[in-house]
Amino acid sequence: MSEENTQIIPNQSEIVSQRIAKLDTWREAGINPFGAGYPDVQKIADIRASFVPPADPEADPHAGPEVNVAGRLVAKRGMGKSIFADVRDSSGRIQLFAGKSDLTEEDFATFKRLDIGDIVGIKGRLFVTKMGEVTIRVAKPTLLSKSLRPLPEKFHGLTDVEQRYRQRYLDMIANPEVMEVFKKRSAIIREVRNFLAGRGFMEVETPMLQPLAGGASANPFVTRYEALDSDVYMRIAPELYLKRLLVGGFERVFELNRSFRNEGLDRRHNPEFTMLEIYQAYGNCESMMELIESMISTVAMKVCGTLKIEHANGKVLDFTPPFRRATYHDLVKEKGGDDWFDITFAERVERGRKLGLDVNDKMSDLDVTNELYEKLVEPNNIQPTFVTRLPAELLPLANPCADDPSLVDVFELGVNGMELAPAYSELNNPVIQRQRFMDQFEKNKAEGDEVSNKIDEDFLTALEYGMPPAGGMGVGIDRLVMALTGAESIRDVILFPQMRRI
Image (cartoon, rainbow, N blue to C red):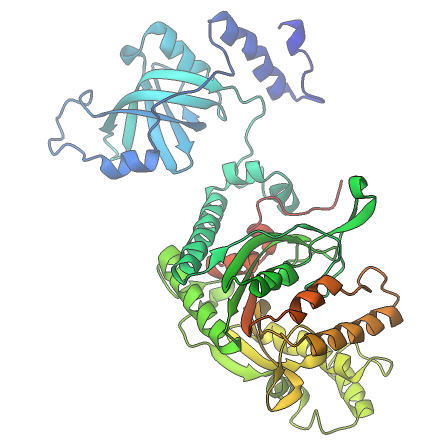
């Protein structure tokens, strides 16, 4: 073994050492173990789809169509004069047959030296084995990239969930179904864009680094902009910038964006996430309901081929419009009792404790009620449900209901026990908006929150020039993908989720 190959991988195992030793063997054979490109590659799925097996079982097995594939060697069987193997690319898997009588001595030696995990190029002809397996009879093997580490076994080597998320590349190699989830995610996002473009919405981009953390109630990530000698914040939402565009004259805009919230990790939250925000001038809460119903049902049919999506334990989510509608107060009463809003605050606290809620008499009356909503109502909204007419204090950027200014004209679309898409009839009254911001300012000040305790005066100035009435909506894309793929954890739909450092 050449000196440059000794201990090139820290704490290398015997298998790794053996594979590293092979690097010299490949080079001595005149083969670069980490080669250049490999042109004219065909997808395995396309090869399978277009191949028509010969009708005559006695047909010449060497006369099949020529093919050229590239991918990872994932199985290898036999070491005599006949070697079977499997190669897999992003579209599928196909069997290989290398017969000593079909190859030059050099090419057969090349194939024999290949290890499971190597990236290879294979030229050959298709035939069908006696077992009925479509197979490539290898004519020319090419090593494209040498794998120095052995692959994990599907059922024994990569079952640790933490390892799967930390080493997503191994997760996809060992579990091809994982790759299918992310292919579906890509298709969902593509179809969302197509749907909105078809409705006349324009995609825009707004700042990810913002001088103020606004547009939602959340703890931001703070960083430093040295050139301006000031702190800036990773955006928690693009809302206030998108509304500025309505003021400027755009009437239908959306942004598919990365947003960041410096908060906890769980199966439905990741600090870096993908959000879709949509704003439609002259729309309202009702128009947003129609939009999200149509969008989800259209995307589900195009990507999944059905409106009924199977989840764990036999649960089926049905996205057939129209979705169920229910008011915040009615749902609270379902869990807290019909008299929940008629009893005293002290009685509500006591009842909340009996229901297992973490409440006390130092909380605000609204916080006690909202604790019941978040712990007992929201987790039980399994089928798509529009929750409407929420308390105004919860949503300072929404328009009040015409018949009751203590409520706002909004909905929260709940699916599978999680909030998927909040939407508003947007507040465009700068006087009320300023007062809402001031109320939030005082609340934050009382709670000692200095980061969020700032008012976006430029946004208020924009409103004072006049913003058309509008409907606005945010859609959690990661959660939408969960709903449409059957995933129960957000980590299963984010390629590289945030993990604790080890």
